[in-house]
Image 1 (cartoon, helix red, strand yellow):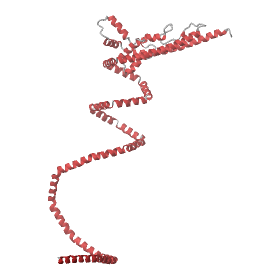
Image 2: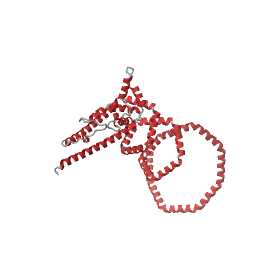
Image 3: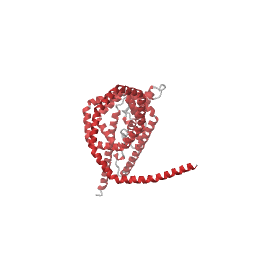
Image 4: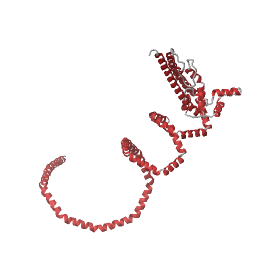
Length: 436
């Protein structure tokens, strides 16, 4: 057992080393696959476009030789197919970041991004190879991949491999951070230029871009729809908030644009609406019926809620409108009367003179017709009620006899004293007059 122990330990180390190599190889193959997919997409971009971009954006090259100019173009604007130099150790890396931030799919952007990536490839490679080992084509191969297995230095090698892997990872992260920062800085510096180039490219290649987009849409319809759905679900609240903010900020602008569009396309919109209504009459009616059936209770509840919410508001508006329009209506009536006073008076006089004789004749006829009737009715009433009136009078006298007698007595008593006083006064006055 003791004799076999060193051999057993070496075998275990060998197995571990082989497993590490296997994992590294898998990672490398995955990186190669990702890279090949990326380069395949960007290889479609044309060399002519890159050359046109280079000649249009570089300074004047009259003083340079043709060879020097070509070398410069190759240096700053490499062909997209040279993917090994552009997207080293990453899938889309900086290219995808800038393309997404720009929101465009032009060859021009890709060219600029290749330039940014190619100028940094050295730093990325150096960050992964600090221990003097041979450089790999993709990513970082750990020292465990080495086939030279030593009995005494395996642990040291493993420790060094782990350390180198951590250093490599850190270096990659730092490089990616620097690259992203540089990209942002570059974009900020050259914002106007990039926008102008994009516009120019869009104008030049309008049909080509549209065709490419259509083709891509057709190919990836389901994938795009799924991505959009996923994005909507993930960022529902964020999108809603952003839309609200945009609406608030640009309320006046949006309203103005809508008004302008409505004015410009009034006839077109009306025609489209009519056409749609005619085409989809039955469908719209069915949808409306279905919606009404489904949401009957909800609609009723919303109606009640709105009514109670807006009850006071509606009443206030009604009162306001009444008071606003009261004076207006009164003024209009007065004005109307003033305007039509003479007209109404003339019409009244005309009607009066027209119908005077007619009315007089009718009145006379009516009086003649009803005279005998009225006399007969009065006579009949008197006959009917004669006994009744006499009986009522008798009853009244009987009831109020004592009352009337008492009142007369009281009245006589009151006036007797008054009469005496008046006579005395009169005599006094007469006496004084005679004496005088």
